[in-house]
Picture 1 (tube, helix red, strand yellow):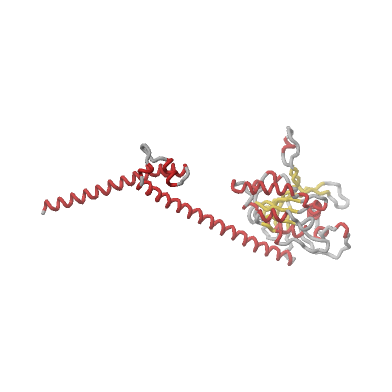
Picture 2 (cartoon, helix red, strand yellow; picture 1 turned 45 degrees about the vertical axis):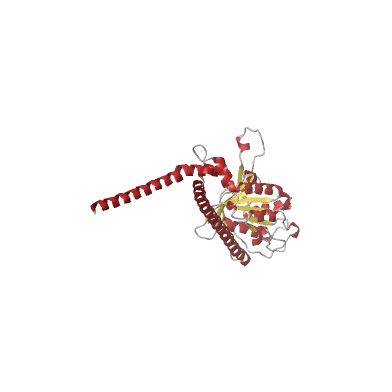
Length: 348
């Protein structure tokens, strides 16, 4: 998909189609126009962009924002303000778009919408939000390594998926594939085809003169970024800075959480030792028939039943045994000293 500089052409202003689309070559032109057109027809355009690290998906997202969010005066309206990392910020921003067709890019989605239990609620909330904002008529791209990281409710709302396969060895472009997604809408069907997601490639009629009418399937596409455009290059630089700041902030947050966990464990271990010493000094308060009383431990140390069981097991299995062994060792040591002294006296 080669980017073409604007030319002085006669404009048809009533369709308000951005110059970036009008001057694009096929099949880029048709794909861009379809994504741009949907919000103008009371719908939204929601796509996912998948691919491994370094495949070019983030820059690809920015490219589509640069090409699609353009007014009829050739002003590019997409900025880094519409590149969102935090899920809460995303939810708040997409609820109040400032214009029809405003482009939002949710990057690093894998940090907050993957299948781990701790993030499942965020995943579900994102699905509900995407279900309720369709009438907002926006263009929204989610950037993530794999489709499976998204909740099924979110996946069903997509218009299409871009899969970036990596940067070309020449470094001039990124290779990708695009699929239109059509999710099954029938229930209680026995037809396998009606149960599966329909994935259709980008297809166009052959429009060359003097040729037979035929369909051309575009399964492998190339994306050439307009680095020569100063505004686009500045957008990429600003994105990299914003991403570094976000990732650094997350790294510092994870380090802080790790320190808190370590400190908490150390405090728990210290308090456990102190509690065992206290129990041993006041056994009359804690002893039941033959073992420590769980009720007494809970009552005097203000702990839950799980901690009480841990304390009792630790005391009987380790603490008391080790203390008994220590006493036996000290007793044997003293006995040996006494014997040595007695032998010394006899020799003298």
